[in-house]
Length: 472
Image 1 (cartoon, rainbow, N blue to C red):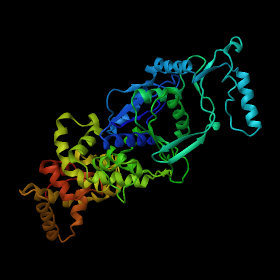
Image 2 (image 1 turned 90 degrees about the vertical axis):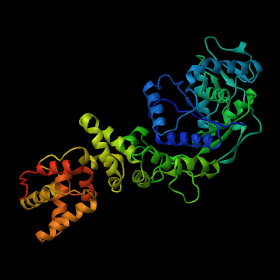
Image 3 (image 1 turned 180 degrees about the vertical axis):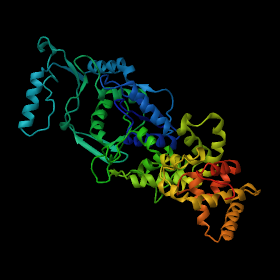
Image 4 (image 1 turned 120 degrees about the vertical axis):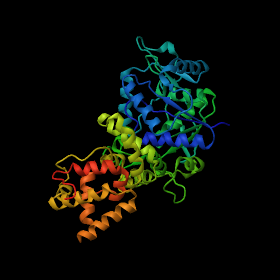
C-alpha cells in the first residue's frame, strides 16, 4: 500500500501555526513511508474563502519547504461529484429526503434543550413517504445512519475510541439548495484522492465518527485516522494571538528561519528520546505517529528563540548573506552588492552568535553594508569619539596605512604596539575603532571587522570621523 496523506486547509485566513504543524506531520509521515503528500483547498464556503487566503496558504507552505505532490486539489471544483454520491446513496436507500420546516427544526432544538438532551435531529422523515411532504418545502438529503450498536475508530494517536450510534443523528449530505455539506465533500474527496491516513487536530475526532459511517454507507474503505492534540499557550489556555497564534508569514517577518519553525513544530507534540535539534533529514527518518503525545502541546516562544538561534549560528553563510541583502532592498547600490555580500559571508557567523532572529541579524550586520552616519545615533559610541579617541584613531590610521599583513593577528598586534607606545590600554584604541567603523559600542571582534572591511574601506571610514586628523 502506498501511503497517501493530505493537508486540507480552508482558505478563510492565513496559514496559522497549528495548521502548519498539521501540514508538517502529514508531510513527514508520507515522506517517511515513501508515499504521497497532497494539498486540498477546502473552498466550498464561497462567502468566506478568498484568493488572498489561498495565496497565503500556498506561500506559507512553500516557505516552510513543505511542497506537495501533484496539483493543488480545489474542493469547489468537485461539487458535481459530491452531489452524485449523495444521489447514489439516496437511490440505494442509505439516504433519504427530509422535509422538515424551519419551525419544526426550531421546536426540535428547543425541546431537546428543555429536556437536557443534546440537540439532534429526531429522524422524523427517516421512513416517511415523500408524498406526505408539505408544499413549498425544498428537502435536504440526510444519511440514514445506523441507530443501533456503536461506531469504533482505532485511532493511531488516541487509541480505541467509540461512540454509541444512538448519540449520532442523520447528518445532512445535501442542503435544500442542493449544495453539498462539508462532511460529504470531505469523505468523497478523501476517497477519490485515495487518502490512506487522515492526520489532523483532535477537534475533528467527533467528525471522524460521522465520516466513518458515511464511508461505510458508500461501501468504501475507511482511511486510518490520527487525531493529534491541539496547541495551547504557555498558560495551558487555548492558543490565541497573545500566545503565538499568528500566521506563518508573521513568523517569517519576525525573523525566524523556516528550518527552525519546522524543528520547533516537530517537537511540539512529538518526541524522539531527548533530541531537541532535529534537522529535516533526521526527522524524515525518525517520524512516526507513535511518538505523538495525547496531551495538548504548549507553545513556548523562549524555546522557539533558542532553536532559531541554533540554526542561525549554524546557518549557511551564503544563504544568510542573501537574506540580509534582500532585506536591504534597493537602499544598496547594485555595484555594491557583490562586495557587501562577500563581507557578510565572512562576518555573519560571528554576528549570529549574539542574536535570536533574522531581524536582529539584519540590523546588527548593517555596518558591513553602510558607513556610519554622523552624528552617531548610539550615544555610547558617540562618547567614545571624543578628542582623545579621535586623536588615537588618527595615529592608528597611519599605522594601518603602512600595514601589509591584514590578518586578525597582525591587526591586533599593531594596535597593541601602539597602545604600549602610548602607554594606554588596548581598549583605548579598540573601543573608538568599534564606534568609528560600526557606529556602535558593541560588535564582533573589532580586528575581525577591520579584516573583513579591508584596508580601503577601513581607512575611508576613519577619515570620515568629525575632527579626524591623520597622524595626530
